[in-house]
Structure formats: structure tokens, C-alpha cells
Length: 183
Image 1 (cartoon, rainbow, N blue to C red):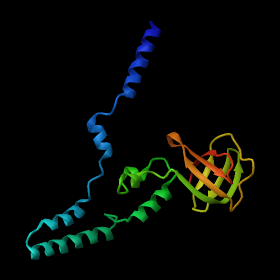
Image 2: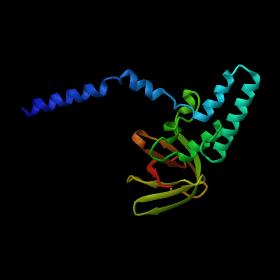
Image 3: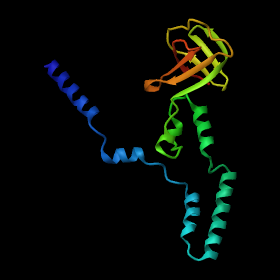
Image 4: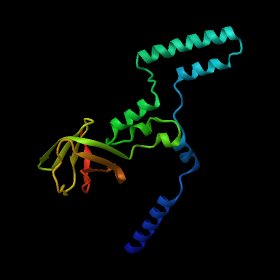
């Protein structure tokens, strides 16, 4: 009896995992967040046919948008600023940039998969290596492996994203160690 229940449960779980997402869920995953209301109101001014009223609308809405950016209620960022923000967040838990809808085309929205940098400092503690890189990020080892050659300031390093939120750090082309970002 126990074997039958276990087999049935495995079958149901497998079918649930293999089933495609409902169309509504798939569509929501692809949607970008709506534009901020103040920005949309500025864009709506384009539809005003009378040129004097349209200019008045643009002036009013541009002033409101400018005030909101000064108060940090709305942030305006170009593509380079978004890339810098993504790079700065690389290695932290959630893919924040993706959740916030940063980017333009589908390839712009992709998360960074690899970063190259240099070692600023490295030390060994009871858990393994703790390495600070030139970009200011600090990573801590969370596996039992070790580098053949100890990391030294100025060494080239490559940090790559693995599966399920893991990251691997390779210094001087050596076999990568599993690490997590702590700062």
C-alpha cells in the first residue's frame, strides 16, 4: 500500500512540474511594470490637439515630473546607469534588477552571468577564503575546496553565476570555489 501511494504521489508531482504555466501566469511573467502615473500623464499631453493647451499640458506635467524626481519619488535612469546598478547588485540574493523591470529589450533585461575583476585583499578564516575585490564587493567561501595558489592583491578574478543562486569565484584561472557575496 505504501509503495502505491508513494508512486502515485511521485507521478502527480512530476506531472505538476512538467505542466506548462497557465497562459495568464506566463503573460504576467513577460509583462513590464506600468509606467509611473506622472510619466504617463506627460505622455498623454501628446494627444491634446490644440497647440496652446498641449504646450500648457506639457509644461504642467514636466514641472510635476521634475518635482517628483527632485523628491526622489521617481528615478530616471539611462541604460548605462541600469547596467551599473545591476553590476553593483551582482551576487546578492534576488535578481533585483529583473524584478524591477530594468532594461529595454529582452536581452537588456537579462541578468549579468559573469563579472571579471581583480583581488583587492584576501584572507583565510575558519570557514575558508574571504576575498574583497576592486569593485568593493566581498565574497566568502561556502564549500570545502581550496585554491592551489593563494589569492593575492592584483590577481585577476572571475565570478560566475551558477544554478539556484550559487556563485563561483576563480582567481588566476584556477578551479572556482563556491562563494557567496557578503558585502
